[in-house]
Figure 1 (spheres, rainbow, N blue to C red):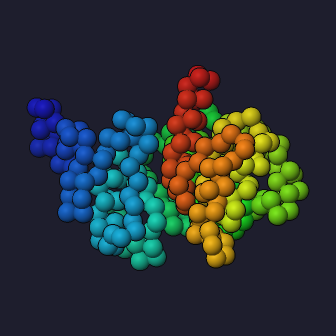
Figure 2 (spheres, helix red, strand yellow):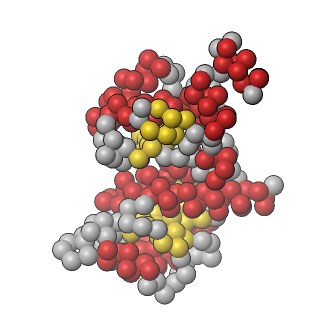
Figure 3 (cartoon, rainbow, N blue to C red):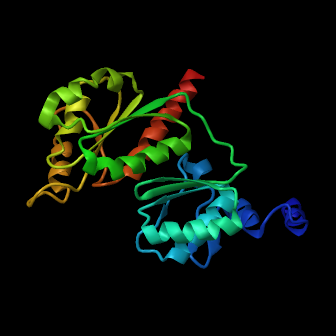
Length: 252
């Protein structure tokens, strides 16, 4: 405690960093940020931007950077990104911003990027599945895994899937995002001997086009796979990271 107080007094530690050390979380006007989640759970807290104001998103991102060296944000809008870039230009002028669709990862200049000896393949059925897959990909990138992205291999032309079977089999974990009837993850799971995580995507026509048909299809899969909620790219990426970390530890 005394060392923390001394560090705050001499300016080598900010009040937010001290609070994170003591409580594990930091409380600000925009809410509480769980700075210790990565150490406790192996997955950092992501800032869910949808429903939050631009100012709240920027404040939470700054807190994340200050206490953990990086911020991971999901479901960001254009206005969120604009305010975030402007805000961080003053607070963290050397921060690097990696944006994939509606997901953003920001890292401070002195952040030490982790590395895992594991590969996660991320496959999509079509272009519409891209933003959900992007969310999963940034979670995997954040953890330091190697990502092999394989896009547009939907089962309407099965040769597109079979052509990529060798790449899918080389991965340690496979995430498959697909909408419509959600057939692609079940097909891929029948081709590989590694864990497959299926992500149903809200795309399609009429009845079931909101992702429910894909979710039902994955839950009833004849092949063995894991299933996350509709459009839950973050959860799929987090599950893949936990598996990848165990694989990395075993290889060590």
